[in-house]
Image (cartoon, rainbow, N blue to C red; front, side):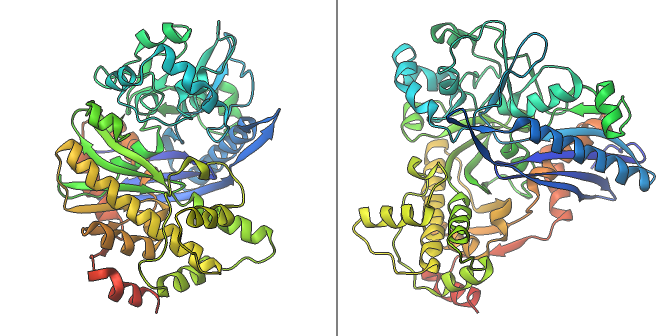
Length: 490
């Protein structure tokens, strides 16, 4: 890898998901990237004024605590923090006025308000036209539908969550491109806001700030932020793949081009990496999305249900007074016979928080199948359903894009779930390489490190560094999956 980092350079990754967040220090030395967690905090939706929102004020306070912990840790080690990068989930935004005041706590995509606007949006913008411009899959909570529920946006700007955090840190308003591409208002070919879509929706032309690319500098810390965190005021906030999946895909440790990826966490993002979008009608009807990746790549993928189903089941069982261990449940689930009932894991009926085990049992009953009693059967149903969904999605991605793959990389939290990884290998018939767990934070840090080096490292070089820094696990497909699953259950 060419280029050298500045001596003592340390990078801060602010990585926030829909259920938790963390602030991590990243160091890139001797051909390895290493992460150190300095602060963790919970995240989740709150009920406020009859809707589901994010408590952004509390979230930002946790970010500041994390930055202060990062500053303290770096100082104790005689290091200097070079820059900060921010990634979060997609779609959601906060509205700020000319003075920079946040008008209200941002809505969560799990709120139902977007559903009510879908028909009205499609009356003025034909879905086929929307897809031909934006290449974005239809999801009822996409930003375009959320914005259509707003009453008066004059004099306001919408900042997606990572852009809102960056604004609060620097005072600079920008729209990072990978996250902008998830709004339904971004031109998939031009790589800029599709402002011709704004007028039919009654949206101000300048509703979003100008775009910025991963690796470009948003700004430096405001004086009061520097004082609160103990960081120097000239500490840069650098745009990264601020959609967490964009950062995760940048850190897929692929050694060849014919790879598929699954970013497995609360949601599963399943797809392939392309040089240009696929905007045909067949792609639209299959509900595939074309989202921006680092270096202008296209993340051609579909959202598939994720480990949200499992975490909500665990939460429900705990609330009912019995909290089985996840490790024990996975072992029991692996021992169950193959061919059990499955559900459509990405059905919108599973989006909102509720009694997930009962909803899963109800979905199984609707198929005419019977789910055996006990939590292990529910867990096996979830994981079988996810693996089957992964296989269908990857097969369709190859068909629509023309890109054939030989290996599937699972990154994120799901890469630790041995049963899910083996079921995915069996369902796809492809080798699965699992890891790293912290792909999102690694992608975040490496984009910052590349910017600091002031020399362009290719994605292939970044990925080789991830591979050399990570303990990866391989899973080979087994006939009917029985032998491999028996080994997992022992």
